[in-house]
Length: 530
Image: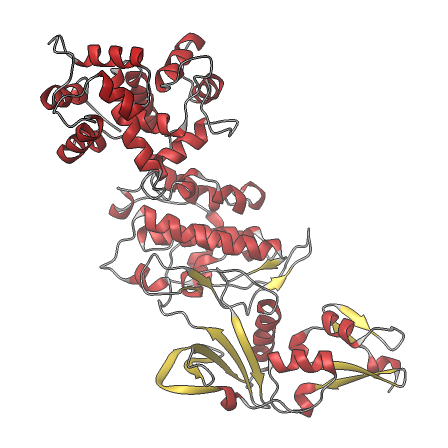
């Protein structure tokens, strides 16, 4: 075999008989989809086309053979998987997908089959094999095994029971909420960011190529169909016009694009999730492409009336016509609409939320001590359950600028400056000191103290809560909360307890607080709540 005949290409690297590689190194540098194995005999390298020598060859066995030098045939597809009746999951240009069961354990998988009618179909599938063999992410469909025959190619994938994301979009009886849409797009953004990080551009992102792992819109997602995907070098520009018309970026139409084209497609997907129609619609491809080149995003129609400004802002940012101005994937993942899962009312930087939040912080400072103690006791129980305290934790983490676990006057002042709030430092100090129940110089507010201040009034004014809290603080169960009860229940000193009871006595001079007085105390000064 001549040097020219012997040369083989592995992941873009040409191996010749001048190179001295071990069999292990040769495997690591080879392109698996080519089905070529290298072995060395008496100082010479030999290339064997495993597909030609053996009509059927599996991915798992091929890896083992490449490392060991074994040349024996692998058991057939039928030895490992059996088809299930009525198991056709879908059909496409390249072949069909059917349901199969693994014989060894009964686990079900999706089997993608391509008949080798056209070389381009074979190349597309081998391209998918190459990329999926090197991906490992929960948002990317997992390829379990592969097989090849003289006339067919097979890929075995994990099974997704929930169907395509396109199905709930196309269902006129289903309207996705902003929270549902935000959760979906976040998962897709994370999967695509992973692809870009390993140098892969998908080039055909659309709802049909996003599967739901389980039934239900809140399921995990799986990005599929990597036939048009490709590896890219940093700074490289692609020229091939590929993709699905509705989702193609304007720079793809100009045949000069990079990974930002995937970001555009995600913007189209998000728009479609929110209103069940693509932003650039037309009766012909020519009309669709004309509108894409124009790049004008419209938010008209009844489907957009209830949608928030924040979600529209993200859509527009993802659909910037100029690629370098378009929002990055990292920028999209940190966009407040994504971070707060479509509910910007849980973002303290939202104008209306900030106004209500700040009003509560101010008002909490003048609440009677006993009322603060009760609210703090409830807050401790709430933050012990992370699922119940998600909002409070989000508020706290944003205001706690130095992330030390406490809100200081500097933290609050910095946050307020970002909201253009005109407040003197003395007033900021007063607010922070009002949050803390501790004496001395260390008056920074903890998560529990902050949570007590911003707590929705329903948490402490519902009847069951009032009864429970009165019972907790009435330590001797005599129907009256007095100084000794507060010292025992709240761990405060007698002097503070005396002040608390005097404040709560409401001028009755009885030296204690009965249940009726307790209810009036807790409801006093309450109007709007956040």
